[in-house]
Length: 357
Image (tube, rainbow, N blue to C red; front, side, top):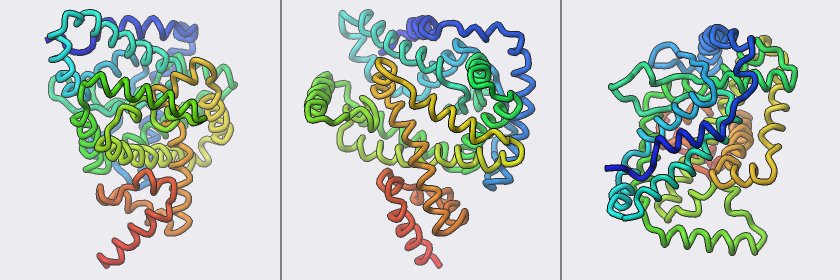
């Protein structure tokens, strides 16, 4: 079965869109691998001391890559994670005389998205479904070397501080998913629930486009809250997407706050790094901003601020101990509404704890 996406064409398009960052050939590039190996190990100790989360999967492994390498890693992730959905779409696509065109078009769209994202990403914890065929390629903390060098040059960042700061954020995400025993499977389960509810129905796409047009005429931007996926979702999917949004806001906010706290005294420039990257996140305009909205990246960027605000509100009420209750059980995770109104979560979890006590 050919499947719903021409993966080889997707990679070709993505690598072309990614382009070549001049710093990929810089002599500074040689310092990245040893630095990130050292800083990733250091970050793991600092994150554990700050959060109490210790990975149950062994020491973190760093990998410095270029943009094409990041693209290939994410294509592999997509194929594994989206396999059930793509197989269902593929069954319909393969029976169509337009199958070669359809799969190539899907590959082009995916390639354009990943190619553009590869120019922006600095680091990423590779959250994959662990499979036996190649465990050495799993559970990695990626750093996109040329992009890191470019940012350091653009903003005159001290490399040692900045690289440790990046490592703290990505290692925090690994500590979340490998230190909370149930979290990885819970997250994958939410993704699968969303995909299982998807029907390869062209009418839903037409309906979503109509909704988009009506909202824009009314002065609202429906893409700003979750991208095209939110528009295509049915009621069941929206409920699950709300859970995913709540979880991701918690994780991103926790990642940013931990990065700053764990690096105190070791990363004096942390405030400057944060300001510069927030400005970078918000600086997209024109087609780039539209792309961010379509793929839901703008909504993801909002998760940083909303997640931090949630954590600060919870800790003001009950300290880190109250926040830590979020890791005790999937039922303790905040919903999207609770992220935006932390008192709702505080009341719910507090009631549950009172009942237990």
